[in-house]
Length: 270
Length: 244
Image (cartoon, rainbow over all chains, first blue to last red; front, top):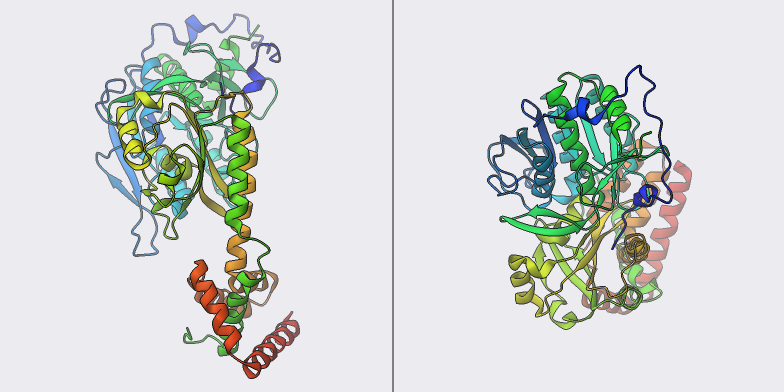
């Protein structure tokens, strides 16, 4: 069993309780998402593409790929229309989100595979586009440790926050800088053990704030397949799915409000 | 080599430094990489450990070093960098652990066709430094699995990435020297000139055969050429000092 970076913080022997908000009435899981199915919520998955029609994913409602012309030193292009998942990873994330929020819309923003040297630029372009399109939730099971991108991702995180776009990002699997996961306005997630998609935890010790299943979990993969995999990548979509559920029951909540609800409904909130 | 606006003196210094670089390398970085993969394989009790590096244009991953099951068959194998588990790792910069690869028929078939060995599990980590992503290190079928495996493999990946980068710096010493000078200079014009010359001086000397041929050429050049080269180097140093 492999434990990605930060997952140790969610070990029951280490994790402490967090205080639920001292409201006149407790924020409960029932209030937060019971009866919700994600309907009306638009979720964007910024990744390697999402396989349309995969048995665990179903329909992909929209797709845009960020591409570069290798012959020209031009800015990245947005190519709208169906595309395949190059690796299987985006499909894995979509499958997890679909499991929690079966009726949400899933949109694929493919930023990987556009050429390696341009990876971060494609990522920036895709994320900026997602924020401009005002998706309700953006799942980011990827990140960069390159310092030169610190400020551009920070700007995008702020832009998302003020536009009510909830960014849910996986922390890097090994200890070190991770943009945009480490910014305070982003909902950052690391893997914890267990399979129950609703068993997420809140971490009182930053930078990673939430823990969700991501260690040896079964996820859909390319070409209609399934694999068992480990990575913080697979924990983030569990929280994206929950956020989609909450937003479908309570539309219009801000990222700040969503975080407060997640913290108060975490399995270790007392 | 000479381009409009570039200084022939700089061109010659760049070429000389580039050609001398590999001769100064203390050891073959391949030997170092072999030692790193052997150590990782041993520590994890794994069936195999391999290093695949990105091709210069980034479109392919090429297996440069491998130890264990299927190693001899996988060496030199090229695969597209926008496919597969290794492709995901190098594209996303994220490690991944997959435990039941044999159940993924497509994966098993593709791998079996290239290496003859079908693993059950893989732990794969990107090879990268602050300056860029270089490839992937993969460990197949670990027998001593531990929670810390990802962090431990990250340490091996770091060593391997630095070894690769150091090998390339020797191969591209001229470019590295000019890059460093360009970075150190606060004169925009000089900096731009150095960067351009550095980019133009990057030859294909990375291959050992070519390096050997270049060294032969230098040895045959004679004392006059050697003196000229030294003179060029001194003049350049004086010139660049006067500009700092």
